[in-house]
View 1: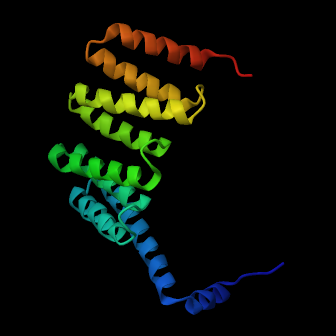
View 2: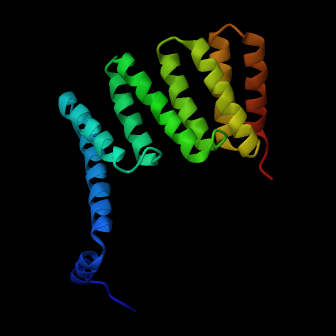
View 3: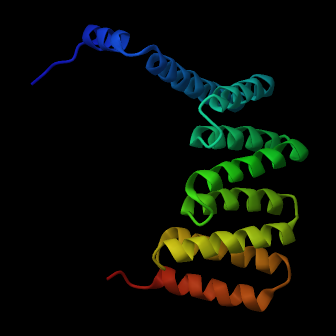
Length: 190
C-alpha cells in the first residue's frame, strides 16, 4: 500500500506544468467565491454575496464559454438578482446559462431540460405563465425522449407543465397530464 503524504502531494504538484497549477488554482478560487457568496447570502450580507457571485462568474469565464461552471455561476448570480427583485438583471443571465448548456451538451439533453425548468420557474414567479409554458413543454419533451417514462424527472416535468397549463386556463389539458403523472407515480414497482 502506498501512503501519500502531504509533502509527496506538494512535490507532485510542484512538478506539474504551470498551466495545470493555474487550472487548479482557478478551480479553488471559483469554488471559494461560490461558497463565500452563499454564506454571505445566508448571513444577510447582500452586498458581499453579490460581489462573491460576480467574482465566481468572472473566474468561470476563464474556464471557457461552454464550461458548466460558468453556467452554474450565472445561475447563482441570476437567482441572487431574482431574490432581490432585480428581474431585468436576472433574465439575461438565466438565458445565457441555458445557451451555454445547450451548446455544451446539445439541445435535446436532460441537462438542457433542467435549465429550461429554471428559466420557466423564473417566468412563473413573475406571473409570465405564457412564456413559461413553452419552456416547460420543451423540458417535458426532452425528458420524455431521453429518460424512461417512470423517471422522477419526467413526472416532475409533467407536473410543472400541468401547473402552468392550469395557470393559463387550459384546465382540461392540465387535468389530463396530471392524471398521467399520478398514474406513473402510483404504478407499482416491478
